Amino acid sequence: MRLQYPTNIRIIRTPCTGKLEVEYFLRAFEKGADGILVAGCEEGSCHFIEGNFMAKRRVNYCRDILTEAGFEKERLRMVNIGAADARLFVEIVKDMIETVRNLGPNPLSQAQSPKSVKEEIHP
Amino acid sequence: MIVAERKSIPELVDIIKDHKKIMVLGCGTCVTVCLAGGEREVSIISSALRIAAQVKGSNFEIEELTIERQCDNVFIEEAAEAIERNDAILSLGCGAGVQAIAERYIDKPVYAGLNTAFLGILEERGHWTEKCAACGTCVLHKYGGICPITRCAKHMQNGPCCGSREDRCEVRPDQPCAWQLIYQRLKNIGQLDRLKEIEPPKNWETSLDGGCRVIVRDDHKI
Image (cartoon, each protein chain N blue to C red):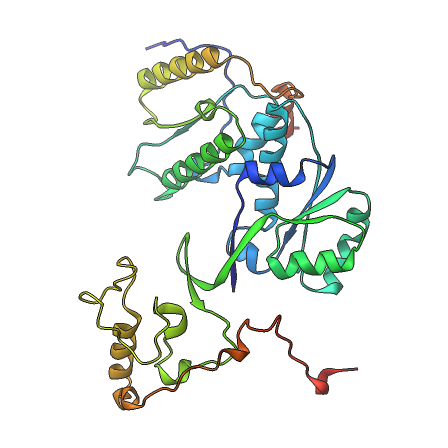
């Protein structure tokens, strides 16, 4: 298939989206991430039964907190993509990047480089 | 346990706006269990406050700490150094915790980050309900273990009120009628006769009337 997707994203692997906590998203934004796309398995196909549903609830809660803090909630989005659905993945990544590009850079004035987030996760 | 929920981020920003160095202090007991003021919530609220400040172009220096119990001097001591080096404390403890910290550190502003709501239990994940009004004179033994003071919208001790529809409360249709529950429960345990007894008006002196309540145990005094 050899599909291409933009190179300005960083993939961070987790065992399951259910591993993600609200504070991970908040800290990533504090460190300068312009947007976060949470890509979970399709609903009903979670290997851990309900990991992607837990992630969905946490993402929604985090979006509420970001809105309260005056930060654009559109910078955080969760989608469900089957592991074999490369075409959909590319389409969603492009759409997310377009959304973030329209919003502009992360408004946090003292935000650090996104590199530091990666360093923190894989020191 | 004591159940609380966090204040909104704009409200918290407004509360701490006059300070630059804030300590967000969590409590490892009740508010950790009800997911309002434990270590994780300290982290989330601190991040949200920093984000809210930076969006507006200002900045807070926030230190995060969670102690085992904010309502106990032994544990409050653990936070002494951290409290000293900050301008103010945003406590994520219950109302008792906030006041315990404020009494201990007389020259330090202490603010409540949570709204302490009620004494209750976890019904299911993410769902808490009130079970006890802490009225000071427990009547649960008379009503099969179901509290009419807390769970009946009219606090009726000689119910039901005749307003319930099916088994739902007329004031709160989303709630079951407490007196329906009491009847069922007494029937199940073979104590329906208890309903024939007329309960005299409740003595509310043991409740919040007349200032805070105090319990003194001489046998435990030193």
